[in-house]
Image (cartoon, rainbow, N blue to C red; front, side):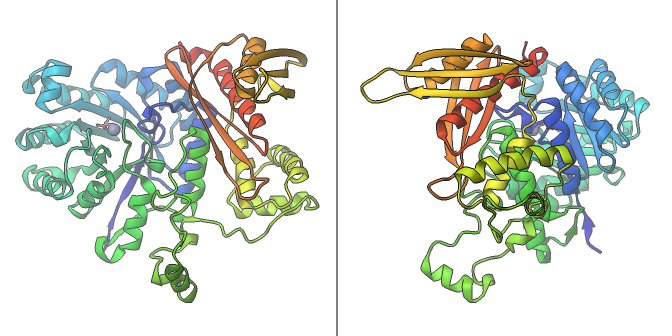
Length: 506
Ligand code: KIV
Ligand code: ZN
C-alpha cells in the first residue's frame, strides 16, 4: 500500500520572507483559499508574534479555511506560543509550529546557549504548547549542520514532550540529496519513538537542491514536505510545490506515494502568486514557466505532433495549463466572458464579474482578439486586492528626444479630484513625480520591470515597480496595452498598498 504524503505550504510565511514580497491581509486570505482549493494539507499562515499584520492575517486565514490545518510559526518562547495560539483561535484545525536552532554554529553565535540548554528549552516549550492544542510541530532549525547524535537527542526529547510532527530543515540549503536521504534513514533508525510523530522536511534552494533533497527525503521515509508555490522563500527560496508534486505524480512508479492535491489547480495557483507577489516566474522554470511545454526545435515539434509522449512527460492539462481555444472579441458578451473565466478556473461573484467584464470591454476596444493570457491578466489584476484609495482619472504626457518630459495626472480620492503636473527624466519619471505630489508620498524606486503578458503588437504590458517605504520594499503592479499607463497604474498600486497598510510599515 502506497504511503500518504502531506504537503505543508509555507508560501504565506517563508514565501513572504522573499526579498521584496509583502502580502496584505486580503491577499493572504485569497492565497490561502486558493491553496485550500489546490488541496494542500497544512497552510502556514504566518509568524504571529512578528507584527500586528501577521497576527491579523493568521486570524483571518483561520476564519476562512475549513479543510486544511492552519499553522503559525513560533520561537521556543512562551510569549510567541501564547500569541500564536490567540491568532489561531478561529481555526478548525490549528497547529503550533515551534522552532529552535540546534547546530553548534547557531547555538554558539546566535542563541548563545549550550546544547543542554537547547534540549531543556525544547522539552519545556513543546510541553507548554501541548497545553494549548494536540497538534504541535517542532522544527530543528539548521538541522543539516547539526551533529547527528544531537539531532537524535533533540528529536527524542521533542517527541517525548508531545510533538506530533518533527521537521528537519535544511535551513541554508547545504546538504546534498544522498546525504539527506541517509540522515532521514538514520533519524528513523536511531530515535526509538520516531513512529509516534510524522517526519517532515523543509529544504532551501541555495545550491539548487531543494526539490532533489525533498524528494530524496520522501524516498527515505519523510511523510511531510514543506513547500512554497513558485519556490518563493528566504534567499534562493524554498522547495517548489509544483516541482515536487509533479515529480511524485510523473514518477509514481518510483516513489509510490499518495497526496491530496488537485494538480489541475497548479497553474492557476502559480499565476495568482506571481501576480500578487510581483515575482515573475522564469520562462524556463519547470512545470509553470512559459516555456515548460514549448517545443522550439523542428524535430521536437514534429515528434510532439506525431505523438505528444515523444517529448512530453506530463500532459499540460494535468497542471491546468490552458490551450487558448476560444478567442474573444469586442462583440463577445458577458456570458462568453464568464464562461472563459470559469474555464480558466476563476469563479467570480457578480461584483467581481462586473469589474472584470468592464475591463474586458475596455481592452477589447483596443485589442482585436482577446486570448486566455489577456483574460488571466485582467483577472490577475483583480486578484491583487489593494483598495483603490486613489484612482486614476486621466493622464497626459509630452515627451521627445529634444524636450523635457512632462506629465499631467488627475487622481480621485473620496470623490475629490486633484490634478498635478511635473517634469522628469522621461515620461514615467515625470508621471511618478506628479502622482507623488498629489498623494504626498515620495518613494524611492528600487526596481522597475516591464514585460509583455500577451502576444501581438497590441499586447498587454505588465509593469512591476518596487519602492522603498520606511524599512519595507513595497511592490505595485499595473497592466495596460499602453506601457506608460501600466507604469502609472503600478506606481499608484504601490501608493494605495502603502496607504492601506500604514500600520504595518512602521
Ligand atoms: O528554514 C528554516 O529552518 C525555517 C524554519 C522556521 C522551519 O524556515
Ligand atoms: Zn525556511
